[in-house]
Length: 137
Image 1 (tube, rainbow, N blue to C red):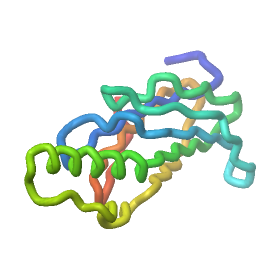
Image 2 (cartoon, rainbow, N blue to C red):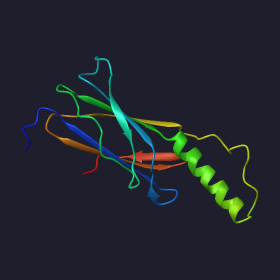
Image 3 (cartoon, helix red, strand yellow):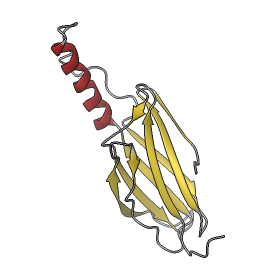
């Protein structure tokens, strides 16, 4: 059992629509000490080529609730741009110049409870029309 007085958090994102890690997704970390306390923004990072966010800030002592905010709209907009460029390069159907349909879930916010000394790995399985999260290892 750990003797740490704080919990720790890590995350990664898999884009299940393409079967690859989601690179470049901005992730913000917030914490609070109890249900009635105000959220405290701790900072953030972005996912790397492996879909992992390895440098999230440490949680302050007394944290009981954590929130991860994932900005997924820019990721899907970028994916759509890449697909349009591929279609143009292959001279397939014309690229969708209007940018296509809006992203259905532009942000994903996950809130979870923590206890001191535990590590919480929270993977996000993502696709354009849905997502799933779980406590990983």
